[in-house]
Figure (cartoon, rainbow, N blue to C red):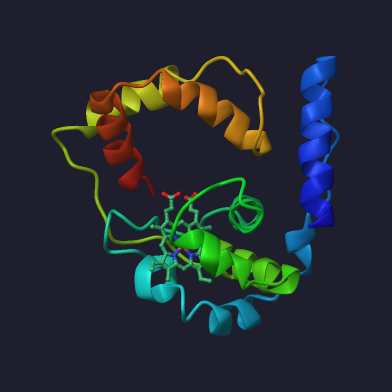
Length: 169
Ligand code: HEC
């Protein structure tokens, strides 16, 4: 929790002052992938074996950056990122659990879901060229960018980008 508070505070301070936020502490580096493997059993019900989800409703975690996974779990736990499924789950995780899970998922190899050929080309164009502008408000370092960007996307554009990203390797 302390680490998250520092991260958010520095983001807010950076946003107000118009300066780059201070580099946050990276708590995940204390994680152990072997411990994460055991702790991930409950997660695999939705996120799949080794974090390779077979259901598009549940994000693939295999190969996802440990920084990102740890940050999202802290945001769910703090109630900053809201989701009826993940919030109660994250509330049961200790800092050590989060670090272990984060390094475990980063070490896994993504496989499975493919991009839908009827949508992904439009999504690729958006993904490569469409992401501009930042207006920091709240949430995580990356979240502030995504909040602003996501608001500008139409339902059709969201479908196209999702299909493109789903097929990325
Ligand atoms: C009952 C199904 C379910 C279980 C069990 C579950 N998750 Fe999730 N998880 C979800 C859903 C649904 C989302 C997407 C939430 C959203 O839309 O914000 C998600 C999102 C996430 C994200 C954010 C992914 C991203 O791309 O932003 C992480 C990280 C995560 N889960 C980790 C875990 C971990 C670690 C566990 C085990 C402790 C776990 N989840 C257990 C359903 C589940």
